Image 1 (tube, helix red, strand yellow):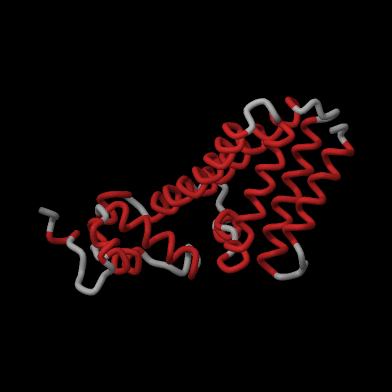
Image 2: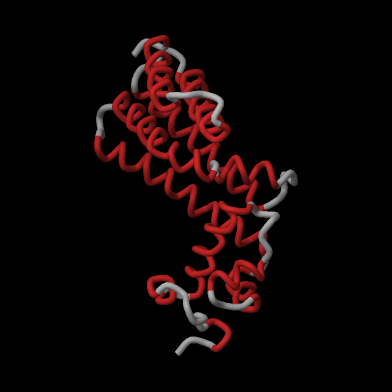
Length: 203
């Protein structure tokens, strides 16, 4: 039987109510941080949305900063899984893997256009380089770039590091552009730019 402070409050959706308290808190944090920003959301609001209490939130995560970092670890895991999927689908075709990653980024642009990129939004709100959530983002981005560089090297591109950096620039730029609405046909242009990078580097 759940502890009294972690019982779901009346009126919550059945699916959410059946989740363990920790997962309810993470679901609530994701929804609120996306909609209102990290600094605009207090732990009480997260607890209320999760149908639990501040005491339960602190027991599971310790601090709000740790909750933010855990949420971003989950977001980062989605990108890691996307790289895993393209490598599994095209195990010996690094060019196809690069194109598969680009297709994944294009697919995510509709979400970014409505809610913003969680990494970009979080970096804007967390100027302290020692914040645990910033460290999550920086570590994730470094690993993602290294993985993309390895794909470029496996594809025999003339300068894998430069190629991976250029592709990363277009991924990041596309997310910002679709978020602020400054450029149209972002997905189409992203794919064309990635193809141009591959050709320029000898694909």
